[in-house]
Length: 155
Image 1 (tube, one colour):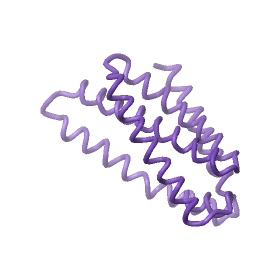
Image 2 (cartoon, one colour; image 1 turned 45 degrees about the vertical axis):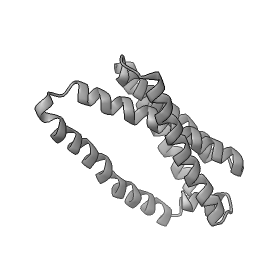
Image 3 (cartoon, one colour; image 1 turned 180 degrees about the vertical axis):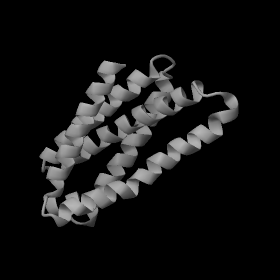
Image 4 (cartoon, one colour; image 1 turned 135 degrees about the horizontal axis):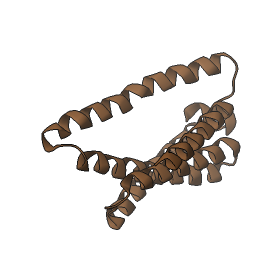
């Protein structure tokens, strides 16, 4: 996000802070919406559909170079993050035996957090090869869309 804000939007700290705040606002709104809707059935499908939506919003985000549109897209990405994480965590907990919930959830969180440095490494490698951050984001977003469609078709 900071590289995108600086190199693509030609922004400063305000641009990056606003994008980051937009993501946080979207996640908060999404969490409130998920709580109000209280999804009880087909949580996996909801999470996968939200993941696909996230891919669509990320694709648009990588293609648009207008600050306020990007802020709106980041808010929508934040909403889809909540609609992915909350139902997915609920589904995992629902289908896990009570005595294993702590272990399973710690593995889920560890794998999610453990992949963040890997993504930083891969992104940095691509940037060092001269690939622009918007192109990297575009291909990552398209891969996310494709993966979501494939898993939804299998589900």
